[in-house]
Every structure is written in C-alpha cells, then in structure tokens.
Image 1 (cartoon, rainbow, N blue to C red):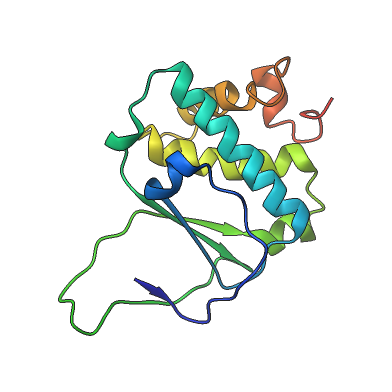
Image 2 (tube, one colour):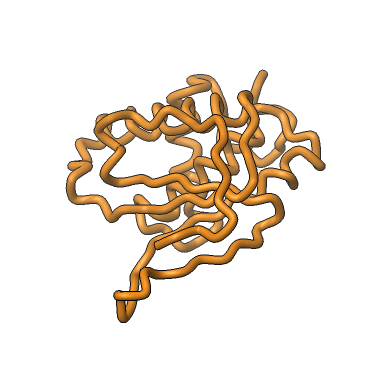
Length: 154
C-alpha cells in the first residue's frame, strides 16, 4: 500500500519487537516533540503487552497515518487485485491548533492503538485500557483525569 504525497520526517522510535506489527507513514511531518511522545506511547504500549503476557507475534499489523487534518490518498500496487489494511489516522495539525499538551497528545496516540491492538470498538470501554497504558507513563494518573485533558501531567 502506497501513501500518495508521503513525506519524510522525524519519526518515533518503534521498539524492535513492534516493527513487524506497526508501520508509520506520513503526508504531514511530525515535529520532534510529537515524535518523542509517539515513541513514549509505543514504549508504554509494549510494557502493557508484557504486563498482560500478550504474544506480540499474534497481533494484527497496523498502519498509522500521520496527516495534517485526516485527509490522505492511498494506492495499491498495479499488479494487486485487492488489498487489506488496518489503519489509524492522526490529524496532528489539529493537536497543534488546539495547543494540546503532552498528556493530550499521548491520549490521542494511545487510544487509537488500544482500539486496534485490544479490539475495543466502544469509545467508553477503550478509556479503561487507555488508562492502563497511560499508567505506564504516569503511574499516579486516575481514570477521571484522562479526558479532563489538562490534568494528565500533573
């Protein structure tokens, strides 16, 4: 699968064990802070997998698209007659336009990863898994603080 108008940018560091299970593509560049937070989110995710004894090799592969406002165009190889992809989309300019703090950005990243890797469709139920993952970063964070988006950091 090819992302049309892809850009090269500073990217998060994907833990080696997650590389076969996560691909990140961008048509809008992350800045260094966002890339660092994405790395932090991935490390927290990995800790949660380990805590739950999740066999990473059994997880479905995911493609994360970093976009300006959620718009993108994909194309498949001309020789292919079909393609399947699991996809999350991050409209990072919206984070910037809303002056999101680190906790808010982490929640945005982690929530979509939790939807996929734990197969949680429900928007309320996923907040409990997000809380578990966020505790890997902020051990004292309470569930009721998470979506009170100003209070995660402290």
